[in-house]
Image 1: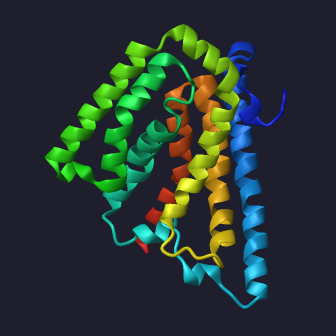
Image 2: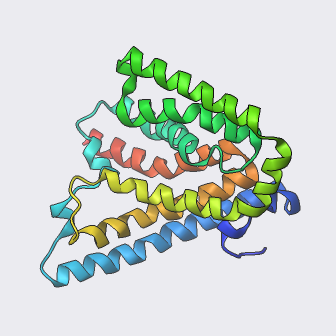
Length: 235
């Protein structure tokens, strides 16, 4: 099996059977998950050697313990359904650079961001504006671009778009920290390596298998957190 880095594998869908693509995605998912732990441990050791515990100076929202005061069913629904679908729409629905996928991404992006990040469903006016904006963006992509244009752009830009998707997915998790200072930034970036590496595996699955495979891999990544939450809540 060709094991070059998965963000450089843009056309495995055309050369490999589906089972091998799934296996490759899972292998890289495991490898990158393990690899993301190493720089974080090195970073934490460097802080501790200076008498600093970064985990006490800032809290990461991705830590499952931050959800302990929330209703259990709500948290499970968020981690296994809402978050995977919403985040995959934002970061990877259009990453295939196919015209209809890009148009759908552009159409859903305003509504998804408004509801997922800002709880805009509480305001009918905001929801109406985002729905109209999304409809206009969808129409513009479909009206002013062609499949042929997107085929050319895909051949030229798919690889950098895949890299941007994975890196962006990692960096967006900076917003999950309660405090970020220049002193804490190396630690925060080290923590964000894990979602960035996860984003690489999911991006590969999305491009070579399809959108819902990316959602499935994203949800699978959240399963250990859900299990840990169930254990803690039962104690």
